[in-house]
Length: 209
Length: 209
Length: 209
Image (cartoon, rainbow over all chains, first blue to last red; front, side, top):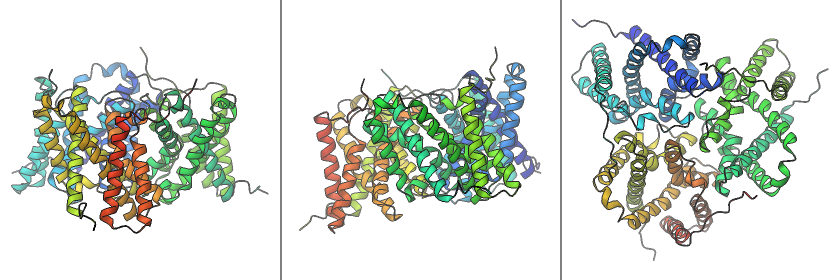
């Protein structure tokens, strides 16, 4: 008996939660950079929706997602509102924030992969799209904030999406139930991310003197 | 009796004027950054046409505008030419430049909104497209020049486009004549921008110690 | 008798060589910036394929090229692998690297022009697409590495693509055999680039005190 945990409704709810927490993490960056209200909103927006927007542009799914389904803009606005209002509390919630952000990573990876499959693209490309959806919002955020993207320097992050994407296609070949497929892949990504942060795993720097 | 001031031809002329002055402002940035001739051209180009290009990509109107209607490239080239030739005079013309740049802001906002309407997008998305058309050329310019976009830090600018866009849809519901709609919206945006600069209005920084 | 040197197969081979050497040059940048393995891969990827990707997005050829023909990803991966393995030797191979990189410049310019022609765009736009294909991967690389793009500051590079593109359309009007057209255009671009580097040609800075 497989629990129907990751059914469509639940999946959509997790997508919203992921978007919200990605937006909150964007607000924190914007505040640190001392941007004005509009700047903070844009940074929250690209952190939450930039990866999916880039994906939609590259596969030609236009108008891009948030232009069709406007609820995502409201989620970002809500994220900006609550994180500005409670910004003094956010420091104490760092662990919860990190947990929800990690859930976003798992969900967004799967969403990106599914979009690639719906365009009948090669599994490798689908995995790239999943990775992009989950992690390139942060790249655009860092570019707008005039930093070398943290994704290219520290922590395993994109790599986890890639490995998780590989698992997705491996499990898919086993003809698993779709719910179970989603559940296993996202749990794997979330667990791996938690382990990676806990044990401070990082990719090797290839540079040597 | 409504004057037929903002008819199609006049609107197109203002679009050209806006493009030209956005390009000139781009040239000034490129010169300050001591770029070479090609760099100055690219910065002028993205300042003038980058916002509209991003808009076209996001809504899937491709090949993007300036690839179909090549006169915009000539306008940018002309802007580069005259501003390089008369660059010593440009300092004295700062007020006129600012005025024309502000006209561009009003016109570009309306153009962006109209493109969104033609794709039957939600009014909120149309306003976002107007804002993008009018102000994201400057964002791309700043990214290429390795600066945190000024749009996210100083002055009310994008916010004026957003408010102006709201006025547009409010007036549209009154079934106003299209010319009057254009005239009122762009005048409002231009006036608000002039007031904002004169009185040094700015958005609150959300960051607090 | 015209040698059938630049036939389709040869052209494709040169495309692959160009991609490979653009990727290698990207790896060197990534290593210098002390990025981790994922960062180095992304920089190699955008250096090699970023210009063509931007071109495909702007003309609306989506999903973009490397999503359809996945061999380009393998070429980039191969480029990363060999340049990380032999990174100590690469310094001694600087001249060969530069030569192959220059071949890439010639080939990529022609590829970009041809894509524009296939979309029936204006010759000026086709030349812009050729220039973009050949040189804007480096622009994206520099933005990701938080530098003002070198393309806008030093050396003639894009300008050579533009002049080469002009030659292409001039020769095309003479109804030349396509092979000869490719051969002459790419040789011209390659020669001009070699001369430009040897004699340290550069565009004038337009800035003057």
